[in-house]
Image (tube, rainbow, N blue to C red; front, side, top):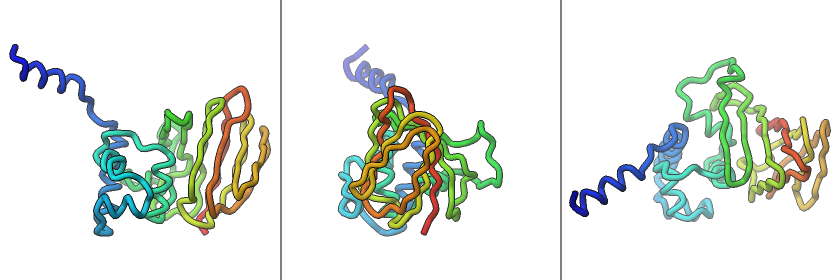
Length: 202
């Protein structure tokens, strides 16, 4: 086998098909950018995300992080659930537990389950979050300014920081706030933290 043939074979074997959810999400992100007539450079200026990262996300060459999606949601005026619902074929009034969308930011130790049936026009939604011990998830801005959030801890310990105030929540505690600036979610206990996030658009 010649050198070029061997290199082509190695490249083919080393490449993997993108995750279907990432592929649909990337296509939707590209559509949203095209609807505004923006280049990757212009989107980079609006979002503060590098052109190369945006390009890889749109082409589904990488799984976008929660922080990246949050920035893009802020630019496009959507919550994360709204964005994720737009990659679904058809909204339904009921979603069974087995059909609820699960999205992971493995690097951050974060698992997000969309509990509410997906719908692009929804104003309120329920999300289940899971953070591994020591996980630290930071958002530099809300997807929609003034977003109302109710954070109810089902298991474990959670620290939520908003407006430079840290709220320490234990099992059963609930925090309500409106989000105008950066927020931070941190698992402070020795075991996984599981919580419900209720989101209401202003």
